Image 1 (spheres, one colour):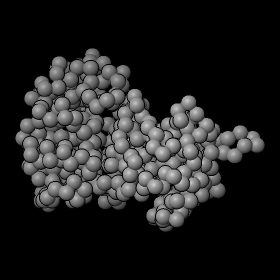
Image 2 (image 1 turned 30 degrees about the vertical axis):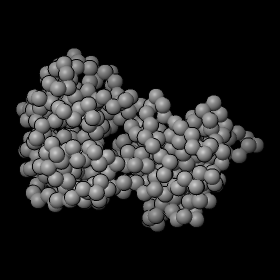
Image 3 (image 1 turned 90 degrees about the vertical axis):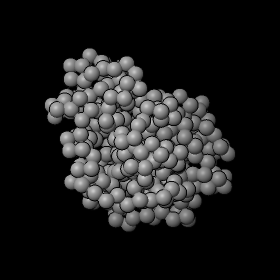
Image 4 (image 1 turned 45 degrees about the vertical axis):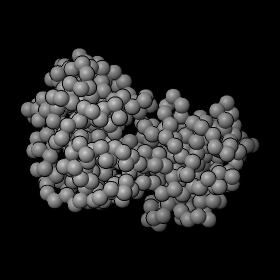
Length: 368
């Protein structure tokens, strides 16, 4: 199969879909790989490394798309890239279509067969290709939240770990999955006073087992949520419903309950965000203030640590990409139920039920 790796053009996205090591693996399986010039610059992987691994370097994204049968990316296609797609292209990338009806309709109209990293789902309901980025985003959420609590950024001027004789900063984490757990690790490491909310009693038991008395666990209901919003210096939104829009748990009026200068980091922004006041931001303009609450809603947080995140991402996506390249999309889907759940659009139809519900487009069941 002919594999194409275009340079990411989303603002401040430094990751790349394949590392030189990944390219070497594809080539060893008999595939051709076309890499756009300077695609790996953000991860310190120059064109020479890709050439040594067997890739052909091409100058433009248009040439990558023209030559390739499967496009391997990191982030969802940007409007500037739409014109490069053709019917039958296989797209393998993060898509987060629940928050982007326009892109969903485009992929259907162009008959692009799109497999989303974030909806590949194993039998135990874990999301193997989302997990490493969730781990990174969770850890960054506390790191960034701590920074924007500083007074020059509009924050409360609170040090999460406090100092002897002064109360520690309070962190409320909404959602105890991979993002929430990793946010909790960093918050505890900083010495913060941490509360984590989740709907699943078994998940709360697990978190209590691993963190013990260092954190408070609470069932996620409106009463507990509002109590946490009142007390928190930093609130982290870490809720995920695979493939669907994030639930809007924080209403505009809830901001009035929060402390002036508190920080809200919405890691769920790729799926639309958990607050009515959430809107996607970029690394060069990451925060905005609504009702005296600092909002951090960067939609590609792991892009800031491109070396770490590219290596973590490609290590889990490579086996699935190879299955598609080695056997063809349809055969790979037939043989791997987890990969089949990653299929979002196929031959002009939306074939993921959660995406169809969120985008309000017709759903068609995919039959291998």
